Length: 132
Image: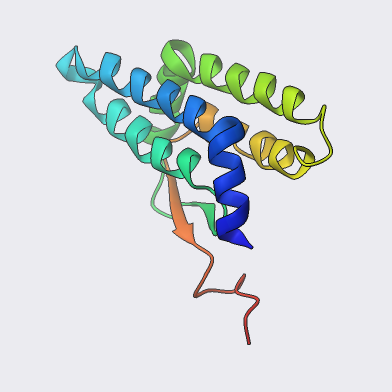
């Protein structure tokens, strides 16, 4: 089921959102000082491309530096990406098959605003695994 949802997601919204994160990462690689934000953008791009079967958890070691980095991220790239998630989520809500994708899209808004201090982990071998 995850694979089917990921394929539908990729076709309807995932590829375009992925391109947005990659573009943000490339732009953030231009000034050397913003490379940590570019790495976060590329990491999130992989999640946005194939989200079902993975989840976002907070890093226990994240502190003030992550918070300050997220403030800078919101100013330069985060709000554009959050707006893209909101727009595509609303568009996905227009169809019945798109509603589960829209819910996933809306759940990605927090990481698009604050990617630093977060980890993307698989749900296959953890507490969220539904297979017996």
